[in-house]
Amino acid sequence: IGDSGEVQILGHRVAVANPEGYVGGGAVDALLRPESIAVVRDTAGPGEITDRTFLGSVTRLEVTLDSGQKVLVDAHGHGADSPEPGERVALQILAQSVTVTAADTREPELAASEHA
Image (tube, rainbow, N blue to C red; front, side, top):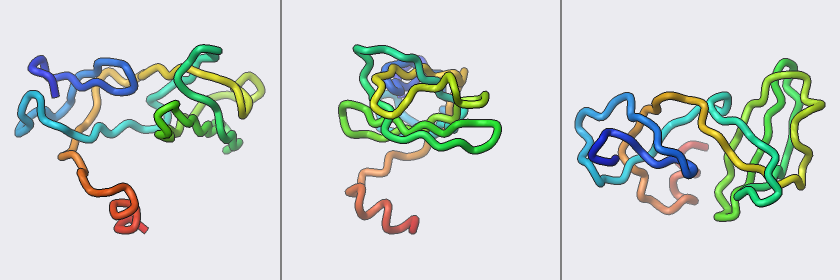
């Protein structure tokens, strides 16, 4: 968390909704819902659509960033205008603020196995 009560998420600065108890400069995990993120077609973007699933009123897109991180995005509408797997995209944060929790510093495999 920065001194101004913001965090850097996917290249965007976003206000923290619950800054109490967190120290500036400390590591945190920011929680974003899939509908709080939008994709924009961008041939030079930092991510690629790796999966697209129609879920009725939304289309769930899986974006794999160049870093290997996977991000889920729920795009509203019928899906015909959403990017196809293989297309490069950029991400936009739609939320005005995010909730944070203490950073999970465990190895990803260990953290995932505890939630299974």
